Image 1 (cartoon, rainbow, N blue to C red):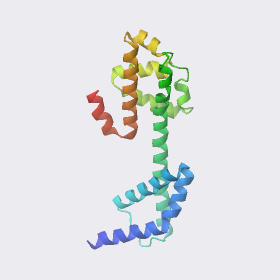
Image 2: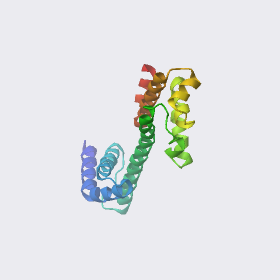
Image 3: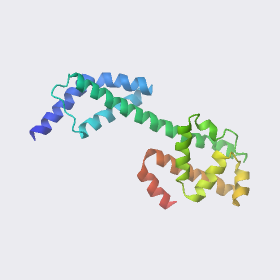
Image 4: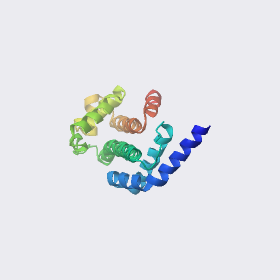
Length: 187
């Protein structure tokens, strides 16, 4: 019980000492006040769950540790938002479905970085086969809805629906694994 009280006091001291500095670091990485606040909260949640303890909360070691924790939390949020934006890119192409042309924005516009492309490909490859095929045709091969339907031998409405469901699954992959596992079985 004594150790728990000491841990709580330590976290309170760290919060009073470093909260603003951590916010500034997060804001410099994320460039969004709301996300920076989320990063600070996430960093302190990690601190509460960890066994990190320093004799003096004002020590250089403690300060470096706090800055490292906020940098990692900020970078995690940044990467998550970046992955969500890549999946939303696929959603933005929905307006092209209206006329059945499919649009020409293409998969290459998702990211110039090979890592981004590999990450998105990994998500597409994890989709059930019927959603994988449609997503590959539309997002990678840049086929229209009509061309995709002809290639796969299914209706245009079916292409649209499968693509919509694939995007939901991919957004779930970005948010968390449990969502993906549950929804793959239910679709």
